[in-house]
Image (cartoon, rainbow, N blue to C red):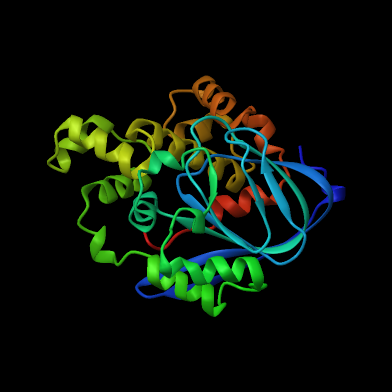
Length: 285
């Protein structure tokens, strides 16, 4: 659980434009004098994080146990099991941006399974002359906002043009899973997008990092969490039905397995970071 006495956080939201991309972001202002452990549920997008200045550090306590510090641009892949346990400490302003996994594939140009369950400093993946300016600025300057000219140029150089993914059937399959909040027949997607089951599954794993069935489960759970947060007076029976579950027992089973707590405990959770990450949307879907 989060020790709120040790945790000060303020939120703001904004829109950043890069080439053809309209990027909504969440701006976090963190003041954490001592180490705290914060749970983050699995979500269906990649997350770009940039921590500006300050003394901030974080560390994954489960999954890859990767670490992050201020003045670096990171990307976190999809998580395959239960909630991330994130240890945080220090002060900073941070930007959180959700990214469609298929856009992430064309952005990073590597199999998405390579960043599953991990956060990675982006300049360690994207080598070459175009990333050298950002790498130098991260080591020698203080990048104080998402509008910093070096960071802006880096995103302009590397974010893929829309025509590179708009015709990709996996991009549209992901969007359909999002549209139906995970409640659809996965084995019919390959047929809908004129692909063999083998080719569909192979490409989905390549460009998303997990199977289509596992990805759909993330969105079903994310929808259930949103419904619980947005409808505090609704019964769990109603929540389970609206989220596509047969009954509360099946909802509770998935919560325990995929979130790490029961839905009753999630309902009483007062960690505002969770609701922020669940409601900061990507407009590039």
